[in-house]
Length: 202
Picture 1 (cartoon, rainbow, N blue to C red):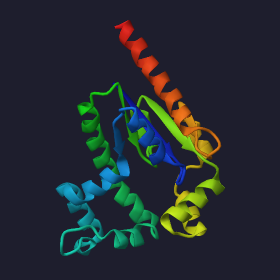
Picture 2 (picture 1 turned 60 degrees about the vertical axis):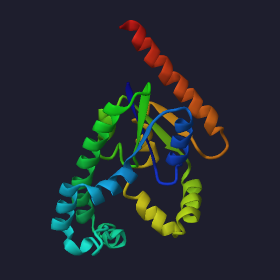
Picture 3 (picture 1 turned 135 degrees about the vertical axis):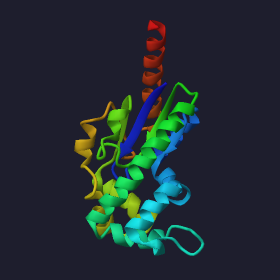
């Protein structure tokens, strides 16, 4: 089974593209969602987060105070780096076990920072979803009800789209003027063809 990565800059539409692959029966590992679950349910991860940020980072009900955490890490790069050093390895191990359980011809790991943390090197192929900056800013300001400056601040913490594309095996254009369905089908068919060719060589 091929292990595929999907990434892209903020507002590029990674989730939308993933939903289309899901319609084709392809399982998706949503890294951000799984990271949030691990910060709540994984005892070792929780212990490290408490050690780093203090016990008040979790509420009296045991829930992670995401607003407080965001207020810390997005204003202090060192804290963000330390949090990533806790969460990223946990997600990497969790996703490894997840891939091992899948039965589809290929499965996809979706993550915003696949290239930045070098996780794409552990995968067979990388898909980058791309959209122009102004398109992405408009999407995120409407979706998250945040300012343009807030979007640009988040953008600055990621590699530029042109840098990410250098690592891509496939690029899906999500500016809105090309059919996403058609592009996803093209990628899907190429992956299935490769898988069949490999099977025939065995």
